[in-house]
Structures are given as C-alpha cells and as structure tokens.
Length: 237
Length: 141
Image (cartoon, rainbow over all chains, first blue to last red):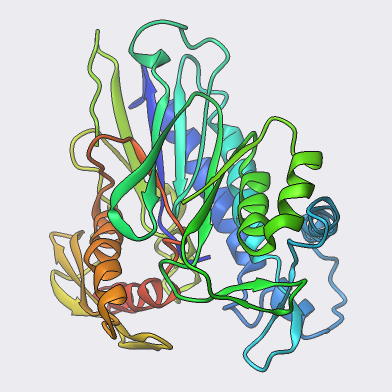
C-alpha cells in the first residue's frame, strides 16, 4: 500500500505497556494485510489471483471477505465504485486496493479500542479513522474531538474544512496528488477533473469507497449515496 | 503535533514508517520496532543501520522522477528529503511545495498546525515509498 501510517493516542497511560502492545498489534495487522494484498509483490496471494493462478494452499479467508465486500461496494454505489481496474495495457484486472486500505485500518484499529480511557486516531496516507474507549471521560482534555483538517486540493497549504470527530472516519478522494489516476467504471475512462470529494462515515472502509465513488461517479453516485449511506456526509472541494 | 497536557494527560504520537516496508528484503523492520515517544516520535530501527546519508533509487513516474535521501544518525533515521520531484508545470510545483514536505514530515515525525490530522487526496506516493525503501535498504547495508 506504500503510505505512511501514524497512530495517535490520548489518555492517562499512553506510554504504558498496554498502549505499546496495542499499537504494535495494530501495525502487525497492517503489515500482515499489506503482505496479502500487495500487488507489488509477485508472490503475494493477490498477485497470483490477478494472474489467474490456482494454488494448492488454501487462501487466507480475508481474501474472500474482501472480494465479497468489493461486490457489495459496487452494488451499493450503483456501480460507481469498482475493484476491476485497467492495468498498464488497459485490461481490466481485479484490484481491491482501493477498498483494502480503509478496511485494513478498520480491522487493525480494533486493538486500540480496548485501551482504557484512551482516545485514538489513525492517519493512513490522508485517510483518517478515530475512536475512543467506552470509558473516556465526557469532559476534559480527553473528551476533545480530533480536529481533522481537509486539504484544499488546489492549494494544499490550506484547509477547506476542519471536521471535529469523536468517532468515525474521514476519507478524501481526488486527483490532486497524482494527476488523473481514478477510473470511472461507468464511463470507462480515467477521471481528469480537479478538486476532491470528502466523506465522513462510521468506518474508513465506507468513507473510502464512497469518496472514490462520489468523485468519479457524479449524479449517479450521489443518488446512490443518498439512498445507501445513512448517517454519512459528503462535501466537495 | 498538538500536545495536550492536562493533569498528566498527554497526546502521544506513535509513528511507524510506511508499514509496507516489510516487503523489502530486510526483515529487521518488524512492527515491534515502532517507537512510542512524546517529543520526537521517530522510528527506531535496530542499531545495525549505518550512519550517514543514503540516496534511494531514482524512480521514474509518468510525472517525473522521484528520489529520496535519508540521513541516519546513531541508528535512527533523522530526516528524509526528496532530491528530485516531478516539476513539469506550475500545478505540479504547487503540489510539490506542500505535498513533498508533508511526506517528508510524515517520514520522520507527524505534525500539523491547527489540526491534529490531515485528510487529503492520495498522500500515497508509490514512487516516494519505493525510493525511500531503497535508501533504507542501503543504510542497512
């Protein structure tokens, strides 16, 4: 996945052994999932799958889980999200990376929710997930929500918004950083428009999926969003 | 990084450097190397990393060349800077003014002005990660 991941904690014992273990476990899970899904490693399960190879070893069950989630995501977004992306030769190949990113962080952060009295946040290459232990005091410094800035895609030294978040995810999709790299499966071409779309949702899986779908999918995606994403919010920049 | 200190409660940033780095031939970047630090969250790789400066491979992308140089002091990576970045036109230049410092900052420590975290479109940069990985591999000898 190739992106920096930082974990932030706020609580009475963030330097203690429990915190260290929880964070190490979160990273261990991310490393494990990255190995499974890395398309840069020719020997990874996903690379073999993309080449259509059949192996005698049973696949890790998460591979099937992700495949199913990709199908659900495509359906829920009315086709504007897809895990079938054109490779260098324009051939559509199974590439769940866009969904795996948020899904992996949701899974890995599970270890952090168990830290007593502790609020936590994860920033995975611009995708943010925050949460807290059930017993964080409602008042005081720990109660403060995480202030999540959203970059102005036309001037990344500025923010267009700050989302104060106690629990949930913020994902932003756009072409600012790398040029036209998002694929519109309905129009079947790469999206070249500027700007970005931000989604705030309960999980990073769905914040990510919807941010991508809304950025490439226009009206069709917005209609699907209004029907199928209760509680989530979106804005464009 | 906003530090909140109130009755002994602090914000701690734990930083690991690009978890996909385990894909390198070096198996020494195990997740347990993630360092917990209040003031200077920095990855602490095992002391086997040589001191000095190491330039990663120059990675060619559609938009130009990306190359990263790291500085290692006493077994710790203290800085990561981009030597070459795509700079085709003004739009690229504006992006690079901000984008590369963010990536450089993330590589060493995580910080932000009035916000705790920043959500932006695709801070992923495979080329940057690739070059940085190769620099780390060189430092590991």
